[in-house]
Figure 1 (cartoon, rainbow, N blue to C red):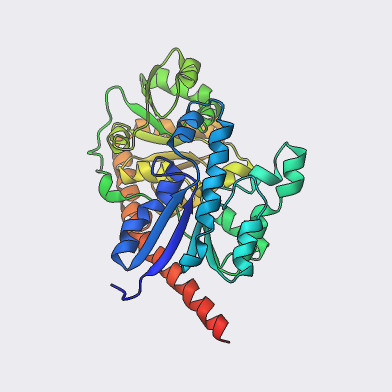
Figure 2: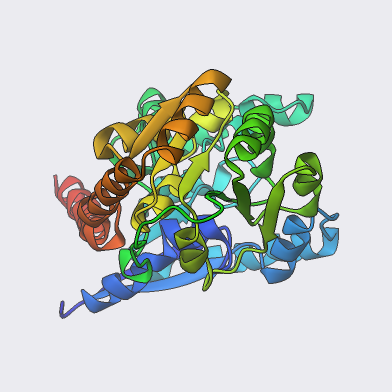
Length: 369
């Protein structure tokens, strides 16, 4: 343990209930604490905001305003810390003034991205927002002491922004929380998906394929985190919609025989980090995914499933696995091994710690020149 702990202020978007915050930053706090790093975490949005978001209801203006005020007061304590660790941005939908200020006063900050949120601004349909903030994340990355990117698409953007240091850290799981599936094809066989209201739309990209395959094999769909809205699009099939709960997700994934991750081939999707795939892999479930963004590297590096582009390829991949249990076992085992060796918090946590100590050391050396 270090005699003088490194003190970090962590500015997250959500608390533990928000997947991006939980996986990209909060899950590393126990490891960092054990190794002499003191982390003070402060979320921007609260539980009530998240509930409204997942219900797709109108967000309270007063609640959002309180979030901005709270973040401002927390930000003003920056001088107490050796390093500021930022998830995405300090203030959403606000210019990069505060990140620039940290740079101006010489405060070290590291910024982390698991989504291409720069497209919230540069591809916005709101003329004012697009013109005012299209280069915001470009600026945040440029002045950061390090940009931690969840995939190559985000890292490439950081490189174009002129970031001085870029580290590629995938979104990972704590594999100790995922038991490996004892593989057999269920009767009926189960095609599974895990996600949220905001990502369930991608299932409609392969609606025709799922209808055909489920009828052909008598298969059921297990959709974790989806809503009744999507179930209404598969009325003739055996569909189970299960609400997402953190403590239940591992058990539910083990009920799947095949894990799917359809995506559109758009700029936002290219910035996604393939977390669904890694969850399937951690449970030893073979995967099929659209050949988009991080999915490509994950599946090619792991040999844990199939990359597909067209409906015909989706159909052939599903049939391939449903007809071949031995191949399911082989791909599932390969996925589990890749999680243990690459896509686990146990592997990535030391890299996160090293990034923090390296940027602090570099800043001190530069200040002494």
